[in-house]
Length: 111
Image: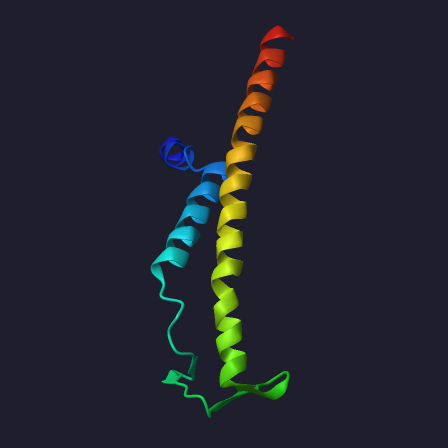
């Protein structure tokens, strides 16, 4: 049973997992329509609406249509940057980790 788990987990090392997760995030950024009208509590907002959010810790906060729309327009850039960083970080660290493991194996065989 332990061998089966090891064989299933073996391909999913940290760099590969980072690359896959980054690609999923980038695919989601491209798949979502970010130009939709903003919503508040599941209801589509219009130009005159104010969204009141009530929380236990902060009390309540009001956001106008323009506030919600501007925060919605920055979301794809934030998520796209996160996905790109994960893909690049995984792609850079993968060969570094492989070289380090190969060097450690050589030292263990020599020593």
